[in-house]
Image (cartoon, rainbow, N blue to C red; front, side):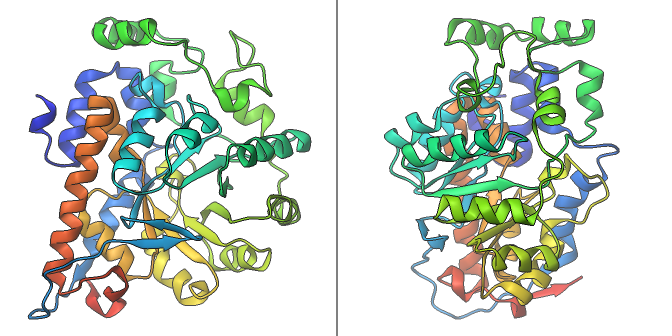
Length: 381
């Protein structure tokens, strides 16, 4: 199977599985506990039907949108995800390059493997910095200042990960940073020699957003211990309100799911929220962002830019979210499989196909702009 044989989400997933060692594939692929929420994220779209209009004259289709003052050529963006140079040696450089080619936003994680400053200097497209709330308040301020110095405009605080989810696939494979693999996991690495060659012949793996602040070398601190020891489970709305004021620019909360929390986000000055259950990787059994979307947009859509992620695999999935009032849709696994499969060309192919699907879908729905998609074009099955 080659990149040219990839025509949809599932094809990229299969090629990624062939290209990267099993423990790394399952880190991307897996969810928490019984992975109920992981499955529901995509299943939710099947419960809603599109109701198209015809004879509307749809020669020219405009896919652009604006979120938190950032103008995007597409109504989808590449969500911040951790450890990308494990999946492909180009990592965030490939992700950012592909996003720039399509004129859309990308995010860089606190657990990113390329510095946000390097990417911000190279690409003019909007970039968000996603970070976690640490027990050390000085560290939080220092990380925000580093983002400001890099020229980043939008700050995104993840609020659903004050502790790590129970990801049993990782426990079975022994996946961790630094690597501590079971025998079966080591065998999987041996079966993917090209991944290993690329890993050892390119720059040493690092976490540059954290390296300046936390000793992540050797056995000093694993990713699991980072979540359990460094992050602050006592984080509350007062803490976040102070951070919003300190940042002084567009501030977004990722992981909001209830109307009450969306209202609090607006009250403390957030410009946006991302409805998200962290790809089913945190609280298993939680509701999907898509299923919560209409309720939150109806309540707060005039006060916040509402985005959503979780389970998006097709252009029609994106259309359904936009019709319910989402300003844009975040992609995670959709581009990570493509990255693992083929680096930047893989991510570009995925974005190209998704762009074509959204454009085709809008024509078939009888609309030429994102704003013309409305809830009355949907019906619950």
